[in-house]
Image (cartoon, rainbow, N blue to C red; front, side, top):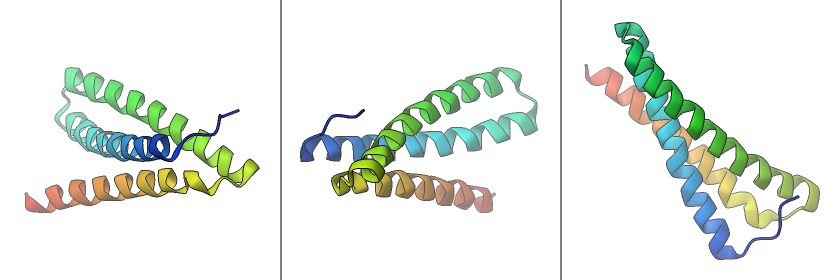
Amino acid sequence: MMETLTGTEVIQLSISVFVVQLIFIGSRTWNIRAIAEKNVLKVLYTGAVIHLSWLVSVAIGATSMYSIMTNFEWRYLPVVFFSMSGGLLGSYLGLKEKFKK
């Protein structure tokens, strides 16, 4: 079970998950390009980054959602919002890059 965090710690988690989501989405985009290029080394490298960023994001998100759902600790809501925002911004940036070419 997750211990109750201070407001500063929740903000730190929110910023962390935002950055991790950007890394996850960016790496996923690079991974897809590497697969299309049949670049095995790049596929393995980006795949490792995807996996690690996914683990961190899920760990932060799952513990935050657990606190919200079981204890109604709404102070963790920014973590969920920042996670979603990071993923959406990453998707937008990846799509925007695709249309540039």
